[in-house]
Amino acid sequence: MARRTKEEARETRLKILDAAESAFYERGVARTTLADIAALAGVTRGAIYWHFSNKADLVQAMLDSLHEPLDDLAKASESEDELDPLGCMRQLLITLFHQVALEPKIRRINEIIFHKCEFTDEMCDLRRQRQTASLDCNGRIELTLRNAVHRGQLPENLNTVRAAICLHAYIHGLLGQWLLVPDSFGLHSESEALVDAALSMLRMSPSLRD
Image 1 (cartoon, rainbow, N blue to C red):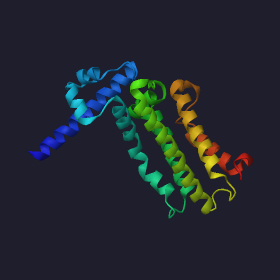
Image 2: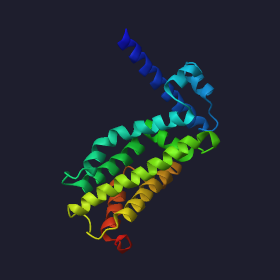
Image 3: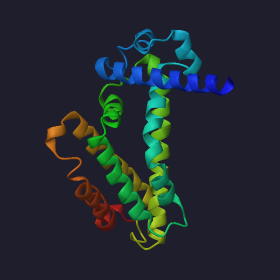
Image 4: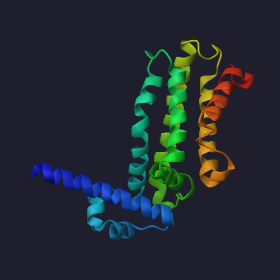
């Protein structure tokens, strides 16, 4: 009985997340209420509050689901024991582009975050979460770059802090642009060339040197 109750709770949580994704995608986050999500999911608002503190918590849960498929590559690139940290990061970024371009659910969630999520007063918690996540991402990229320098894959005098900020902004900008105007370039077909362009910047730009 306890196992079934746990499974039912998990199913309800997933049903709420699916309904939230659909509603956010159609109406935008600001124009979607928890009552809208509850009605779409076929649950009560109380059921939503059982699993999520507020709307910002719902959005963050959707974001967390995006990271899971890439965790192994991220951990490898950040490990001091990894012999090819730059290669792991390259594969991670290519995989990210492929997922956004080819997997509808991942594309929808990214489109919500990039273009349909307004940081209104009720979303202050999410704004703080996104600020923290952005700084954390910079730090994880820098860790990978330091590992790549240590392995001789990048110049010894690379300013890893500045390089991490530039790489993060480059990837974020590409995704945002493609999600807004998908016909502007082929995110899937150009994925390797786009990632290699960023790696060339790290290897060759004098502005990224100490």
